[in-house]
Length: 191
Ligand code: HEM
Ligand code: HEM
Image (cartoon, rainbow, N blue to C red; front, top):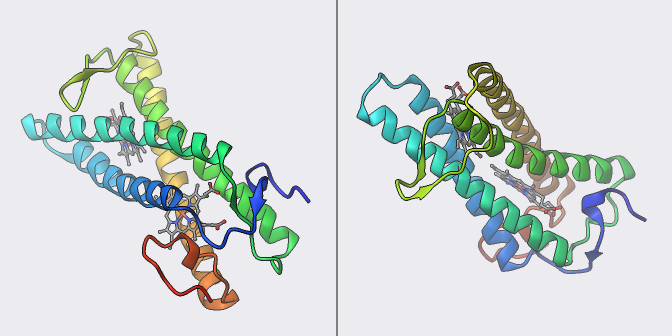
């Protein structure tokens, strides 16, 4: 039964592969760093430190975009572990939908940041080295709009992550299945 676009090609693998686990936790860590850098950069007083915080934030955001594209490419070409058989239909749909929305937010956040940067007309080099091409002409209204979208997407991602973590903990402590254990970066005994 196809329960969601992300739930296809499921197989009886017992855990996520090392590549999938590495990408999941690396991107999760970088996104946490991004929230700290984003809010620090916005609230810092005008100084060279503020500009450096923005370079780190924008560069790491572009790195997240690249890693999410690699992750999606990996996802499209590999089998993934099947959800536990006893999960109900609504739970499968909720898992597929929330994972899909997480991917959308992980792509849309850096893309909206890229639009802010382009529409502001600020030349920018990723990690002070690689010039970032412009994807929009300089336009103050577009920059303000992209900035509002970027903030809204950030808040939406935080809400999705709350649900995501709560669901992972529910699987582990209430349903007592392997869903969390098989995504953990270290070897843990599967129940
Ligand atoms: C920024 C933080 C995070 C993001 C963006 C994120 C995103 C995702 C996405 C998109 C998937 C679906 C993978 C796929 O089907 O291709 C996933 C799976 C998973 N995540 Fe996260 N995650 C984050 C943090 C966490 C945390 C903190 C936990 C644990 C408390 C967690 C537990 C899991 C588990 C257990 C799965 C596997 C679900 C399954 O087997 O179907 N994630 N995550
Ligand atoms: C996963 C990636 C990203 C996350 C989670 C993220 C998150 C955030 C957060 C939480 C803020 C502070 C709140 C606000 O919007 O005012 C922020 C601000 C900002 N971010 Fe990002 N961001 C990401 C990627 C990027 C990228 C790739 C760029 C540019 C290339 C960028 C450019 C900006 C700019 C210019 C601001 C200041 C916005 C303003 O002045 O209103 N961000 N970001």
